[in-house]
Length: 103
Length: 253
Image (cartoon, rainbow over all chains, first blue to last red; front, side, top):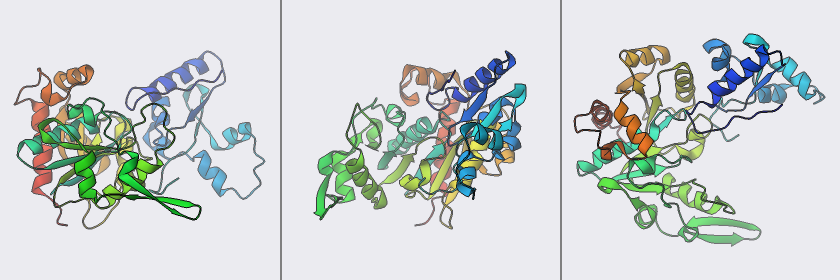
């Protein structure tokens, strides 16, 4: 199952996504949570805390900096660059704006 | 003259505070131009305009073809373009919009070119400029916010709001003439101190979490026009204090 949560800023997308992800993980499913927001806060709602959320290596940075061929599969990328959140949810952050340059 | 842009996480209250403040300034007899580059409606509602078409039409620019390359140059001066195309909202606040998609359009390229030329060369001596930038951290500083000398980060006092505020402060253009301040929105007792401590930023006001503002929001009307909001409403007082703070510390151009 693939679910995308959308909505206006501040309406509760992140909180809803995190609760759904953890509830599904608790019921025994294996869950990957992808934070596609460029102001990524999903880690906070999943329970990783402030420092844990801001320290996440983003997938895009990881791919840009790698020297090896792009052999990694989707599953390998999640495995290498994701982090474990509570209830066994695997979290990966797609991108975060670090420099005010067009991206 | 003020030259301010509002930024913040989506839903923090940028548009409402920016629009309310703009009207308060206009009520003092000052010329106020608001610049809306937030793709979500909000500022126009706070100005009593609803959700208008106040974008720049294609004929705001002339096409200049050079071989295979076409560039779009503003047909009039920025000041004349503002006179011609900005809507007039409540209390005489002028309102210029970019980035709203009304149905399917082929491209925003042409109006984007016009909008960028106007904000690159705003007639600052003629207008107080108050901008509402897109929510989040991706868009506000990619050329949309460079015109401002003061950035007001609107922060809702929760973990996501605080983290977003720190990111925005990191990304904002810096310089001797630039100032970054915080307005706490939906604040409870002690939140101004909490946000100052957790962000290390200068907090200039805290707008209290009041039913009046929420009711106005729900009804889709400006707080200044909402019957439940009285003249000495604490929420409006807080926005007034934002305005007074900014006017008292206008950065010299």
